[in-house]
Image (cartoon, rainbow, N blue to C red; front, side, top):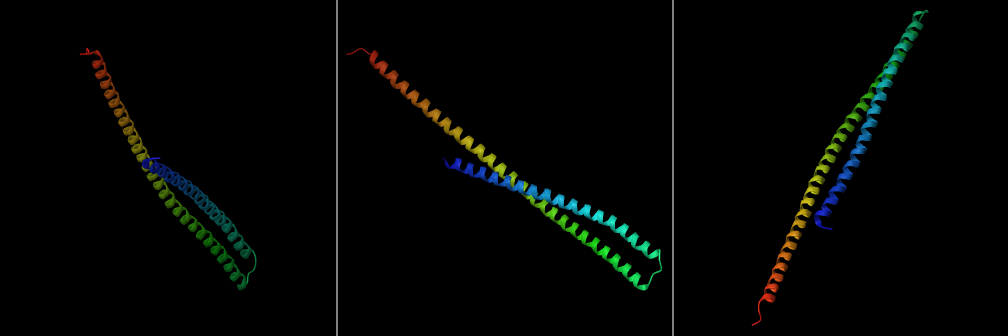
Length: 165
């Protein structure tokens, strides 16, 4: 195997590695998108639940005689709802950050794959040109050999046609 062919096989291998990396990055990005959507959905569902729960808590307080302790408990229950909502929001922010990181990695993997593909294509063209040059040189040598052989044949024919003295 010629050195250029070996380099071309290395470039092909690198292209395959870059394509594999791109597939991994694409999968991670897809997972991150799904995770972000799930967190958004969970937050929306919790907010709907929290609104209903808060209304229910207020209705329970409004429909009866209350004590100071009941008001404190109501505040605590609402604080728990707010804390839970804050946790859902934090989870969503983490999911967004993961998706953004996955997007950056995916873009980098795309660039790497594109660069590897371009490099392999250039080397393929170089090797093709090199082999074409070798083929042209072999053809030229063959033609020179035929011309030389034809010259020798002509000389022999001339010698054989000359009268013997």
